[in-house]
Image 1 (cartoon, rainbow, N blue to C red):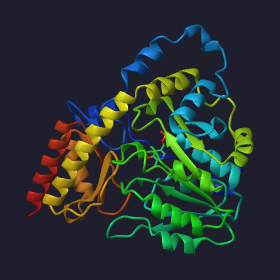
Image 2: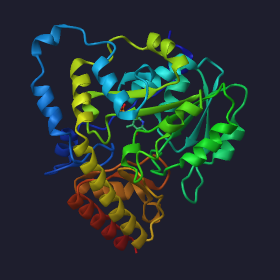
Image 3: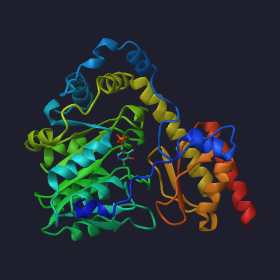
Length: 363
Ligand SMILES: *Cc1c(COP(=O)(O)O)cnc(C)c1O
């Protein structure tokens, strides 16, 4: 009965609820450093906005057009409000793109490793995903190889910038040169979930290239620097000629009123964003110094997480060790490597101490 592309899919296994895992391990505290959430929480302005929400609106459908949020985002990013398509998290926009563009037999090009949702949704639509490994020495995309992988069947190219899980940033010069070599009937999707964490933001964003290329899309989320993962708000900035069809495919009431007003309040509090960025930059420097001192292979991060090779490739054992100390990190993205979301300065120090001890005990 099931369509054949989904018959063999395994459901996304979210981590156990933190409370359950904590109890199971008998831990006094457990910090999740595996999901790239904001360790500094959410803007207090959001709390206020949610508290002030008129509860009698509960029975009403939300604004399908997210009009106010749309206007605020368009102003903030200097794009036309008609270019925006909102989703219940960026995850939904990724699913929407696959649903709207892909047919069985189409091809999708992506780097490897990268965010897993691109592949999942392409496969559900029956498309074939071609992985192009990142350059092993620095984690950068192999853009030449990606261009060469494009065939007449290629519909989409995914570029996560900075990339999850490598954390590396592609320059706009490199992206511009890439775009010039990509056929105009291939859509290039730049997922900027982490772009606000980059040192030179907003100069690092592909938004400024949108007027030059009719086949370029930029994707954003409120889940990371805005600390709003629970409310599920993401969006794409699309070429105008694609928007009508995407809006037709999108579910009409995909963003609750609370999600819309939370995102609006979060966007208005740029002080919170600035503070988060500078704390994350500080954490990044501390991790860079630590991993360099430890001589552990790693890529240069421009995000709120660090990807690195565990001592002697013992990623599983190190993950367990960190868990015993109350820190949950992400493995399974590249053999022998772990991805750690930055915590507070104290948490980072403790985690680094556990890694140091782990390495000493191996010698
Ligand atoms: C977290 C993340 C997303 C998903 O964000 P949501 O808005 O929470 O769905 C999309 N892309 C990348 C690369 C991410 O890391």
